[in-house]
Amino acid sequence: MGLKILRVVMICFLMAIFSYKTTAQLAKQDKTEILRNIERLNISSMIQPLPLKNKFLDSAYNIWCGSVVKAPKIGYYMFYSRWPKAKGHEAWITDSEIALAFSEKPEGPYSHVKVIFSKRDKKYWDGVCTHNPTVIIHQGKYYLYYMGTTGSAPITPNFAYSPAWYNYRNNQRIGVAIADNPLGQWTRFDKPILEASQDSTAPDAMLFSNPAVTIDQNGRFIMVYKQVEKNGKYQGGKVRFGVAFSSTATGPFIKYNSPIFEEKNSSYKDAWMIAEDPFIWNYKGINYAIVRDVIGKFTGVSGALALLSSSDGINWKPTTYPMVIGKEIFDETGTKLDDKLERPCLLIENGIPIYLFGAMGINNRAHSMNIAIPLLLKR
Image 1: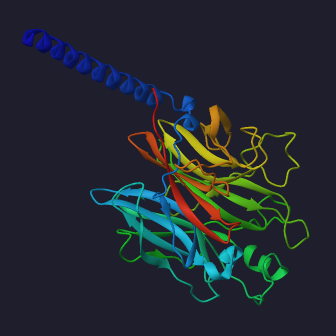
Image 2: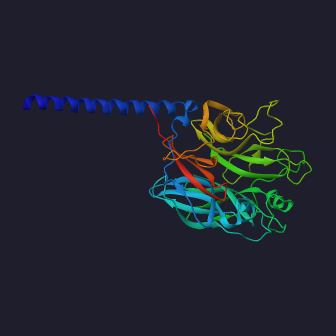
């Protein structure tokens, strides 16, 4: 009897080893296939419910715009925007500052470390507000691209979306700061690296914001950014995205003269906004972008996040599986969160996305936070 039991145990043991190896091989094959062809990456199939602990919150501040990078041998830095919760969500335009948080694990918990940019004199282009951080590490240095603005209009109790609010909003420009170590000193410049067009009819004549940056296979820096046209009103006209190129991280960036993320003569050409909040990266000679699908052009779902690709940074098209995540987000208890995901950021390791970060409002944006959604590669 003992010999028979031993044989059964050995058979089960061998079958377990075979099953483990087969599963590992299948997983490896899946990763190999994805790394061979990101165009067929189906991020929506990788989305997992949000763990309750994967929220970055501060009771005193609204939090937005998380850009997460891995610091070699240390952990993970999150560069984020924050402004006093008591001032309301729309106070970002006058009170946002860029801060730094750290975690030993990619999903968190993240802890506030320091404010990188505090307010400075209104005479500076970024003297009032800094926002929209996006960070790349290049040749051992950290390059922090961001939006800054200034203004002189009085701030009143009914300030949001008033002509005075737009005075600050319409001065948005894009700049860059440099550091050897995020915990140390940052070199901040007195001029932006991207300015509005002098041509009043250009699609970028009013403002720039929401920078997203990557480096292509030839070492060229690609910057995608939001732009707003002038139309004779203080609110401005259509919101579109442009692209600019540079041979160095600090510019000069040369702008392409037409909006991207839309086709000429498209049925969407008269829409106020088509895409927003880009995150971009380059993999094996192809550029990829996650954008908010404002009117459902790419995924069919207004407010979803869409995955696009481009060989040149100018002409973009939806990938095989453009849906990244819908406008409804659920946590691990099955509860639907009360906002859509904005300002996406992928954390990518060894070519595979492992976390989708994003900003989200709470209680009709009475408060806001950053979240880290796990991505699981399924067989």
